[in-house]
Length: 177
Image 1 (cartoon, rainbow, N blue to C red):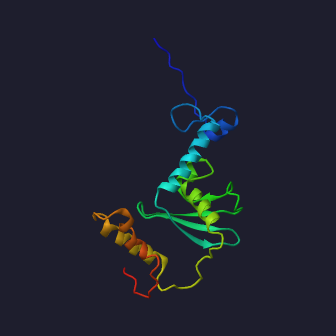
Image 2 (image 1 turned 45 degrees about the vertical axis):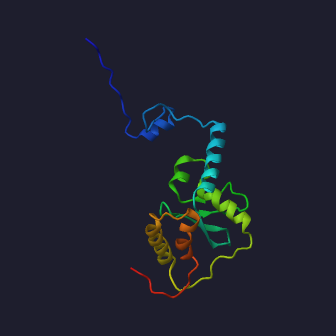
Image 3 (image 1 turned 60 degrees about the vertical axis):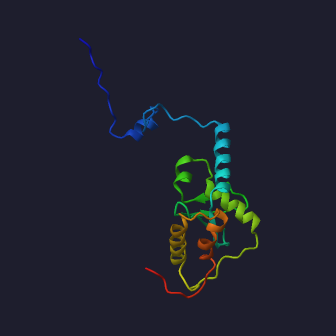
């Protein structure tokens, strides 16, 4: 006869963790401390991805700290990057899931915003108030144009001109719902 040992599960697993016994949320063993070499490679990968992907950046404000919207028109995502101690980016924050989950202190959006802010030091944020169309309407128009050109056989440099032009058109055309 094989005797099974009873497993005691504490009522509050966080109390057990603070008492010295490890609580693991996922199977696969205890969490391991990251290797500095792995962290450097992960950060380098984020820098590379910020260069490879077609990210659109827009400075929302410069003071009291830079706030940049980083948008990927292919994935139809937009995230905010906040750089409270710019030009030092070690305290930068991003609203993307990669930044929140990985704990690297960076992501492709932060890397792209850092590079953009360094290369555009005199760029002013857009003036407050209506510019003819709301930003949401402009991005909706960009997305509509991207869908229209996806099957075109033109070179990529020519394909992206029409959707990109919507960013510069400031006519007071009525918004499409």
